[in-house]
Image 1: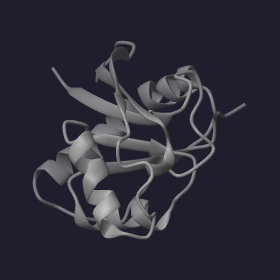
Image 2: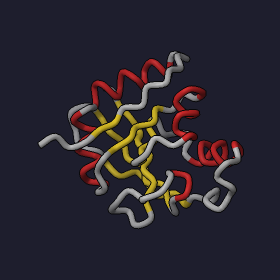
Image 3: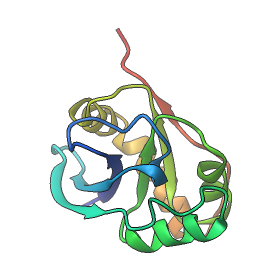
Amino acid sequence: MRKLRICIGSNDGENLAHTHMGDTEFFYLYDFVEDTEGSFVERRKNVARNMDHAQSDKMKAIISLVEDADIFVAQQKSPNFIKIAKQTRFQPVVVKVESIQDILTLLQDEFKNIYSYVERRKNDETFETIPELTVHS
């Protein structure tokens, strides 16, 4: 059974925040098992929210809050997302949609591809790939 844990930064639990993931009020975690819909796990308060954005300590603090996640989701490829891709076991994913429900659908559609990136990272491989997902009409 292949499973992924997703972390989405949101202020309202319905839409992705229009800011960097680290500046959101909460982190919403979802579990995905291949060929099933994502299921909500929990909401965690971002206690690192007011730290200076440029500090590497902020990135470390956020990672420690959601260290059980495999994937971090945001709307933009920030400098910290690039660092996370290059230096950690977490897979950043950029999405071009706002609603969490649409994000979950996109991630389900791309499950096999995203899972392969996560597996590579679990085997200590680091690389710069950050998938960008959008709704195709």
